[in-house]
Amino acid sequence: MKKSVSELLETVKKDVKEMINNNPYGYSEGISDIAMKIEKTRRYLTKDYETGINHLTNEELDLYKSSISDDAKQQGSQILDTSRKIIEKAKEYRRESNKKTNKVETNILTHAPYFLGGTKKRKEQAKKEGYIKINKKGIHDLTYENKLGHMLTMNDAKTLFALFSIWEDQNYGEWVTFTEYQIIDKLNLQVGGSRYQTVRNSLEKLRNTSVVMQDAYDIEIGKRVQTERFDLIIADSSIVDFNKAGDVQSKQYKIQFSPYIGKSFKKGYYTFISIAAFNELEVGSAQALYVLLSGMTSMEKRNKYIRPDGMLEISLQYIYDTLFLEGENFRNKITIEKGCEELKSMDIIRDFKFTKKGRSYDKLIVEQSDWLIDVLKNKKEFPMHQEQLTFSDI
Image (cartoon, rainbow, N blue to C red; front, side, top):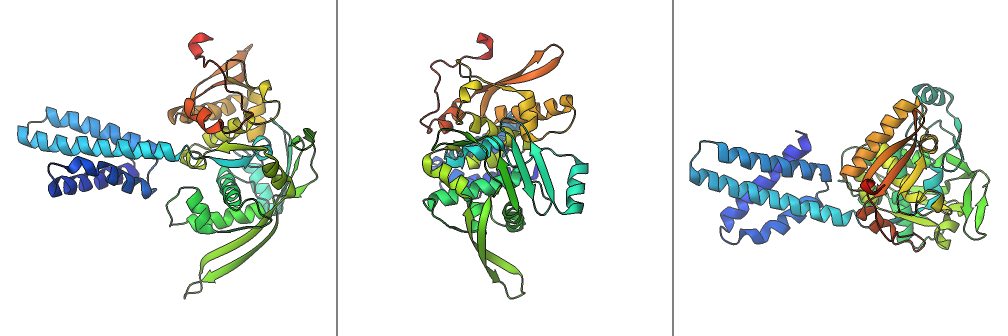
């Protein structure tokens, strides 16, 4: 059992025992309070809640099979059943939290200037040279450069999306002002540990990244264009606070995003995603697929990928190229399958399958979940399908 699940069960059982002892007859009124307290700690994932619920159910079944007295069974069952109700309620709160949407510029999502793949040799060479330039194909083609030799990861994408959300809170002003704590808060993470340093590293990588979007959509003129090379962050400054030991205690930042990005936000070319749900995904390919699929459903000419029945149908080669998977195709397919499995387990998609052309797999078909549709439907242009079919109907 994961350490986080063990801690969750220990905490819940302790609180339940105290609640029942303090109020033996009206204790059930405190279920929501304990569930909210647990959820506010941000220590646990939805998967932890699900594992905890299953464990408590099995523990209660084992209790009734044991040889202890009936009174002991009743008392133990009361604690286990109430603990399960609390975790189920905490899971409900998390699901509602995960429905909260954030705006991400759609060109960023469909060009994907962050990398799931990239060979070890490529990364080591870039680190040695202190510079990297990549021409990447996919849903939309991209030229990527980083002055320090870094390839942005999905963790860096999270930081970028959190910055977009803070920028939205500040009405897309010329400058975005923020602290590291605000980024961590936007990501719905528990404060502490190495999180501050992780955020600082991401900011440094983003600050040194420039791109050419080969197929950017200019919403003002209504067509695709190739941008000039531009920095994601064109200007920045910071104020550093040190503690008594001389270590960095906190930083307040000010940055300016490229006008290419600001124009899209102000003109309405963005996609609604849930940063909280994105952050809960543990498999890198699930993270990358979630934001890619979301961007595709909001981009121009999206009907190329959205079938009349609402299913998404995408070339596997486009996905491999977009996520920069440089391995053999059979390994790439396994990577995508693992991501889809986690998206399905989290109810971000309802189902998926791969289709073949000859002996080779050539396409991924995804059935959207009600949750995903609900998150995306804020976008006026998103085509809601009239009738949701299942794979048994195909």
